[in-house]
Length: 299
Image (cartoon, rainbow, N blue to C red; front, side, top):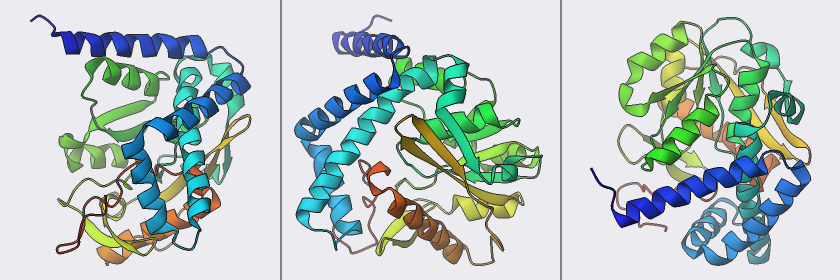
């Protein structure tokens, strides 16, 4: 079947972007990060719809900050967004030795050893791909995660190849169902979950997130119960020389018999992580798009 002009332009644009990322991969990290600063300020200035989303999110979650403080935080979050995106150049195309040097896994790393069913809770910080790659290259264990297919087939292939380049990560589509993920978890594969996105009203519960009732997937407590598995948070932090990926101790006495309380606890932990680096969280996402019945839209 022939390709239409818009599809052709999109494919050519994607190919050019991938070539650019390959060219960036061998550059010194400070150069890549400087380009990220420049790109971040440009995105903040021109991508007005997404800038409004960020400002809305920050106003809801940090009402005590002044308008000027939230604007500064929003500009910085665009910079981190751009820097971590350009960092995928060396994450997905750089030599393993460079990644071993720039990706530091620290904290309770022993929680990831062995074959005990283990859920890795990795929130949507901008360095999430650095986080999974750090675990992939530093921990001698297979990983599984849930993947949302990209509408652009070429982009989809590039992202999957980048994430699976070391051969220890399996990507399952969300549509493949719970049984597939539970089987992998029980077989000893780390189940890497990122449940802090708005996936609509289906299969979600409303629990507080920074004091706002937020549609949240209860996947962490559900998988923890089905495993049965321990939950180990992993938090990636962008630093001047790469990423520090901290493994937290496993949660104690989790899950309970209260699914709502267990899901609320996930958001409570997430808030604590965000407070340590608020500009690095994925504020460009419409986290509060789905509202409880009767509540007005916020975006």
